[in-house]
View 1 (cartoon, one colour):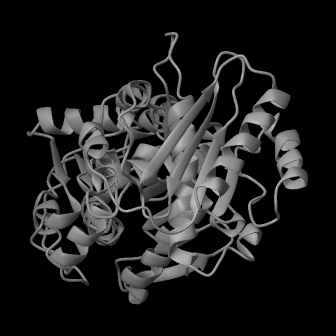
View 2: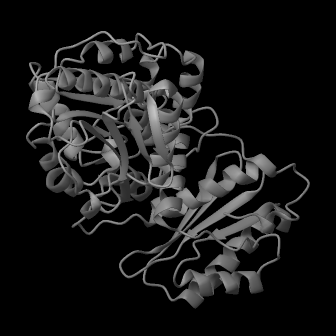
View 3: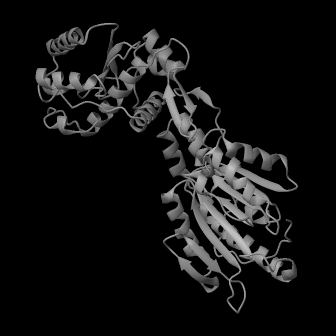
Length: 448
């Protein structure tokens, strides 16, 4: 339904990095804000949502004979991926929707009824919904659908439940979707639709740094701390392909060297089925000293090898307090960690590293940053298998929009070197932040 544009007061000052243009495109039925973090997506969306709902209500009141049976007169849905984001958007609504227009608020189900007339009769109903279970997204028609953090919402929610709500008789069927890209899902397709249909739609792809209210120096500092993949998606607002490489500058990291300082960390990735066990030794300063690879070797034999490596480091002048062992603790690693705790000095046995989807992403992102960081990052060994595994290591998009990290799927390839080095690098960063050169007493209490 085409609704003539009207001038309405917006109770905030939109910035010139795209928010002004977004509000000026109010005559478009579909709008998409694909923006980097801290761009101000929700704030401008809340204000525009109120303006559009008020505009539709005013137009319907002028033609009330055609809408007498439409209840509520204007129906607005705000759909978020989960409860925390619902709550965040609700807070923004309570701040920016004029209190003089609010007739009633129900906090337990996030419903707000509003009026644009002096008699305070309700014309607009705002409802917040979670898309966590798409089957719950069933309702009458919608005049305005607002989707916040749209890239985190499942394709099923959009394709099967939200789109059909837009074609009911007597409803405007407008859409505002905002979010930071997460792969190429329905949100990516919606963005392309808006881009390719300028007569009825409008879109913007705005990196974080286009927000003039953010200090550019802070953006630069943040970018230096993030891996290239995360920079491109979270700050650059890029719709990344379904798969791609994770580590950049691997060969450069293998060419640089740095003085060996601080404690030594032995990061261990235990072999599972087809993978080998790898021990990676990295100094707190970032210099990698050695890689030990054991394929199809009994765990008891691997423990003997670890004892030999440890003894060799002691003969080279390192003390017991200077050597920290951080094995992966999952699965068989649970037993191996207990053996390490029994066989090695308490200063060496840290309890290990639990690998989950979340912790794996954390240490992979950390390693990606440190490979790119020439000043204080990791200095890799020029070991062909290590460099190869790092260069082919890839991410893929899960159905949820989040990234999964792994060796290429469907090929006889491994990531054992990658994981051992990632564990060692994570632990050496923690050790470097703590170490004073006076021994590692108490370090074993830290959680890796």
